[in-house]
Length: 275
Image (cartoon, rainbow, N blue to C red; front, side):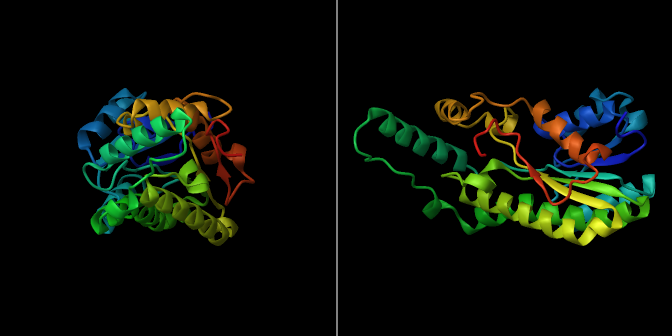
């Protein structure tokens, strides 16, 4: 087993990609700490893992809070005294209520306009309506949350003598996607953070890499307009949405010794939508 006896923290592990990563890592021998902002969701993930609560445990915390992250890592240090793998997966789909609905409305208008074959008369109109609070919340969860967890994890990884950090970015960081400028900006920031930390920590046997998934069939994407989801999937050389487990296998590769000479890299399980 590739992660036997390794203590792993998966943030945002209550559903979707995070739950799939937690399940795969547990099957590979890891002791998994599942974080989620929802204690019920985190507990459900733990209950489904081999060994359940006797072997794994959950911690409810909002990674956008520096204090909550420090408390979470304090609990991990007290219980385990070490950390071997950190997977920064926690994320949100919108920075404020109603944003997804607005994106869906714009997507439906623009898509119908494009499909008509007539000269463009409909256009995206999202950024002028993104509030300061929405921008700040999106960056707080994705970018600041990743930073807070990395910062708190480093002493524990050093205590273990080696380790791996896997940060979840997105194909949106590489392509840019209309309708979600704050999401794309946050995910692009994660790539810069990943490379900087890789340069800083490589000499101390800590590897830092990122994943840039495409559109994945998760609860976070369920609210996206179906026609828009189909269009996005159809533009990829592999024309479908990915299963969360297909991202989990990439995370496992970056977390285990199979990728021992990988650091500062970004793998792209996105069906070829970006090459």
